[in-house]
Length: 178
Image: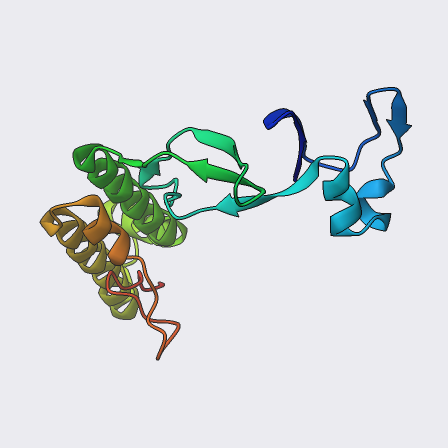
Protein backbone atom coordinates (compact mmCIF):
# COMPACT_ATOMS: atom_id res chain seq x y z
CA UNK A 1 0.00 0.00 0.00
CA UNK A 2 1.14 3.52 -0.74
CA UNK A 3 0.03 7.02 0.13
CA UNK A 4 0.41 10.20 -1.86
CA UNK A 5 1.44 13.06 0.42
CA UNK A 6 0.99 16.65 -0.75
CA UNK A 7 1.56 19.72 1.44
CA UNK A 8 2.05 17.48 4.51
CA UNK A 9 -1.35 15.78 3.99
CA UNK A 10 -2.31 12.39 2.63
CA UNK A 11 -4.35 13.08 -0.48
CA UNK A 12 -4.72 9.57 -1.90
CA UNK A 13 -3.97 5.96 -0.99
CA UNK A 14 -3.28 3.05 -3.32
CA UNK A 15 -3.94 -0.60 -2.42
CA UNK A 16 -2.35 -1.74 -5.66
CA UNK A 17 -0.24 -0.08 -8.37
CA UNK A 18 -2.42 2.28 -10.40
CA UNK A 19 -1.73 5.18 -12.71
CA UNK A 20 -2.42 8.65 -11.29
CA UNK A 21 -2.08 12.32 -12.07
CA UNK A 22 -0.05 14.67 -9.88
CA UNK A 23 -0.19 18.27 -10.95
CA UNK A 24 0.06 18.20 -14.74
CA UNK A 25 1.96 14.92 -14.88
CA UNK A 26 0.35 11.53 -15.52
CA UNK A 27 2.31 8.73 -13.81
CA UNK A 28 1.88 5.12 -14.96
CA UNK A 29 1.25 2.22 -12.58
CA UNK A 30 4.72 0.90 -13.34
CA UNK A 31 6.38 3.53 -11.11
CA UNK A 32 5.26 1.53 -8.09
CA UNK A 33 7.53 -1.35 -9.08
CA UNK A 34 10.19 0.25 -11.28
CA UNK A 35 11.08 3.35 -9.31
CA UNK A 36 13.31 3.28 -6.25
CA UNK A 37 11.96 4.27 -2.84
CA UNK A 38 13.77 7.60 -2.97
CA UNK A 39 12.39 8.38 -6.45
CA UNK A 40 8.82 7.69 -5.28
CA UNK A 41 9.28 9.71 -2.10
CA UNK A 42 10.66 12.63 -4.15
CA UNK A 43 7.20 13.06 -5.70
CA UNK A 44 5.41 12.39 -2.38
CA UNK A 45 4.60 8.70 -2.84
CA UNK A 46 5.33 6.76 0.37
CA UNK A 47 4.94 3.10 1.20
CA UNK A 48 2.47 2.63 4.07
CA UNK A 49 3.91 0.90 7.12
CA UNK A 50 1.25 -1.26 8.79
CA UNK A 51 1.16 -1.35 12.58
CA UNK A 52 -0.82 -4.45 13.61
CA UNK A 53 -0.10 -4.12 17.34
CA UNK A 54 -3.79 -3.54 18.17
CA UNK A 55 -5.11 -6.04 15.63
CA UNK A 56 -6.60 -9.14 17.27
CA UNK A 57 -8.19 -12.41 16.15
CA UNK A 58 -11.56 -11.57 14.57
CA UNK A 59 -13.03 -14.78 15.93
CA UNK A 60 -12.79 -13.32 19.46
CA UNK A 61 -12.53 -9.54 19.00
CA UNK A 62 -14.08 -6.65 17.10
CA UNK A 63 -11.10 -4.79 15.73
CA UNK A 64 -10.97 -1.01 16.00
CA UNK A 65 -11.14 1.34 13.04
CA UNK A 66 -8.06 1.77 10.92
CA UNK A 67 -6.39 5.11 10.43
CA UNK A 68 -3.63 6.21 8.10
CA UNK A 69 -1.39 9.03 9.33
CA UNK A 70 1.53 11.03 7.99
CA UNK A 71 4.44 11.81 10.32
CA UNK A 72 6.22 14.74 8.71
CA UNK A 73 9.23 14.60 11.05
CA UNK A 74 9.89 10.89 10.40
CA UNK A 75 8.64 11.18 6.82
CA UNK A 76 6.58 7.99 7.18
CA UNK A 77 2.98 6.98 6.57
CA UNK A 78 1.52 4.50 9.06
CA UNK A 79 -1.68 2.49 9.02
CA UNK A 80 -2.74 1.58 12.57
CA UNK A 81 -5.83 0.18 14.23
CA UNK A 82 -7.73 1.48 17.26
CA UNK A 83 -7.97 -0.85 20.24
CA UNK A 84 -9.94 -4.05 19.72
CA UNK A 85 -12.99 -4.86 21.82
CA UNK A 86 -13.57 -8.39 23.08
CA UNK A 87 -16.76 -10.06 21.92
CA UNK A 88 -19.22 -11.06 24.63
CA UNK A 89 -17.86 -14.13 26.42
CA UNK A 90 -21.33 -15.62 26.93
CA UNK A 91 -22.08 -15.44 23.20
CA UNK A 92 -18.69 -16.91 22.32
CA UNK A 93 -19.15 -19.78 24.77
CA UNK A 94 -22.58 -20.55 23.30
CA UNK A 95 -21.32 -20.57 19.71
CA UNK A 96 -18.24 -22.64 20.50
CA UNK A 97 -20.31 -25.25 22.34
CA UNK A 98 -22.77 -25.37 19.44
CA UNK A 99 -19.89 -26.10 17.05
CA UNK A 100 -18.61 -28.91 19.29
CA UNK A 101 -22.06 -30.45 19.57
CA UNK A 102 -22.54 -30.22 15.79
CA UNK A 103 -19.17 -31.89 15.23
CA UNK A 104 -20.06 -34.65 17.68
CA UNK A 105 -23.41 -35.17 15.96
CA UNK A 106 -21.62 -35.40 12.62
CA UNK A 107 -19.27 -38.06 13.98
CA UNK A 108 -22.17 -40.07 15.44
CA UNK A 109 -24.47 -39.74 12.41
CA UNK A 110 -22.99 -42.60 10.32
CA UNK A 111 -23.77 -45.11 13.09
CA UNK A 112 -27.13 -43.67 14.19
CA UNK A 113 -28.92 -46.22 12.01
CA UNK A 114 -27.49 -49.03 14.17
CA UNK A 115 -28.97 -47.44 17.30
CA UNK A 116 -32.37 -47.02 15.60
CA UNK A 117 -32.28 -50.61 14.34
CA UNK A 118 -31.53 -51.92 17.87
CA UNK A 119 -34.23 -49.70 19.43
CA UNK A 120 -36.79 -51.10 17.02
CA UNK A 121 -36.04 -54.66 18.07
CA UNK A 122 -33.42 -55.49 15.45
CA UNK A 123 -29.79 -56.48 15.74
CA UNK A 124 -27.90 -55.06 18.72
CA UNK A 125 -25.28 -52.36 18.20
CA UNK A 126 -21.77 -53.89 18.27
CA UNK A 127 -20.10 -53.18 21.61
CA UNK A 128 -17.05 -51.47 20.03
CA UNK A 129 -19.42 -49.04 18.25
CA UNK A 130 -21.30 -48.38 21.49
CA UNK A 131 -18.00 -47.72 23.29
CA UNK A 132 -16.78 -45.34 20.57
CA UNK A 133 -20.10 -43.48 20.48
CA UNK A 134 -19.99 -43.06 24.27
CA UNK A 135 -16.41 -41.72 23.98
CA UNK A 136 -17.56 -39.07 21.49
CA UNK A 137 -20.39 -37.93 23.77
CA UNK A 138 -18.12 -37.93 26.84
CA UNK A 139 -15.41 -35.91 25.10
CA UNK A 140 -17.96 -33.42 23.72
CA UNK A 141 -19.30 -32.94 27.26
CA UNK A 142 -15.75 -32.46 28.60
CA UNK A 143 -15.02 -29.89 25.90
CA UNK A 144 -18.22 -27.96 26.66
CA UNK A 145 -17.38 -28.02 30.38
CA UNK A 146 -13.90 -26.63 29.62
CA UNK A 147 -15.46 -23.85 27.55
CA UNK A 148 -17.92 -23.05 30.35
CA UNK A 149 -15.03 -22.85 32.84
CA UNK A 150 -13.17 -19.99 31.11
CA UNK A 151 -13.66 -16.51 32.47
CA UNK A 152 -12.58 -14.35 29.56
CA UNK A 153 -12.03 -14.25 25.80
CA UNK A 154 -8.27 -14.81 26.00
CA UNK A 155 -8.77 -17.95 28.11
CA UNK A 156 -11.27 -19.26 25.56
CA UNK A 157 -8.88 -18.59 22.69
CA UNK A 158 -6.09 -20.37 24.59
CA UNK A 159 -8.15 -23.59 24.59
CA UNK A 160 -7.70 -23.76 20.81
CA UNK A 161 -3.94 -23.07 20.64
CA UNK A 162 -1.99 -26.13 19.54
CA UNK A 163 1.09 -27.12 21.51
CA UNK A 164 4.43 -26.33 19.80
CA UNK A 165 6.02 -29.50 21.19
CA UNK A 166 3.21 -31.66 19.81
CA UNK A 167 1.25 -29.88 17.05
CA UNK A 168 -1.59 -32.39 17.32
CA UNK A 169 -2.37 -31.38 20.91
CA UNK A 170 -4.43 -28.43 22.12
CA UNK A 171 -5.81 -27.85 25.64
CA UNK A 172 -9.39 -28.42 24.49
CA UNK A 173 -8.47 -31.75 22.91
CA UNK A 174 -10.13 -33.33 19.88
CA UNK A 175 -13.25 -35.40 19.42
CA UNK A 176 -12.60 -39.11 18.82
CA UNK A 177 -13.91 -40.87 15.73
CA UNK A 178 -16.33 -43.77 15.56
